[in-house]
Length: 233
Image (cartoon, rainbow, N blue to C red):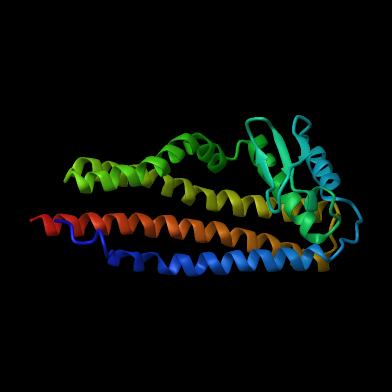
């Protein structure tokens, strides 16, 4: 019988990712809050800057809308809508401009056919199914002593890991495009570049934490599978 139903020693594998996740969340919250109180000298709102960045890049089919929540900003490539949270849409802070420009970075990636973004968008359905089905398949496989189901669960979760891995260059590239767009258009002064980079770097750290968690979770599943096979002999 598999001996780890009541005590699972493999959870320790996730500890580094858990620590980084807590740190990243605290970092993004404190950094965003700090620069949310620092007004940009240009005096424009995040939505105004977003529309101008899109216009300067020849993108006229992407709308900018306000959405609810905090730090809920995202670009929807299917509907070609850039959705900004109230603090970013109406905000005139360095944090607001940085986040708005970052989402514009994704719209620019979409417009120019940035390959990592296109690949990420392609595997979204597979990654979604993988993350939902992986654990049920894996643990049902262990319960039924089915190596096939357990292995299938690991393979499904691998799709979610690939999605997280490809997300990293997509996010960092969007941040680079954001800073370049803000500087190039004169929306931020040279001494405002550092704070904007701090906001975007803090946000990127959450994706690093998510990727590390996915990788270590995959290693944990593999370790559990190995322990199961050893005990089953």
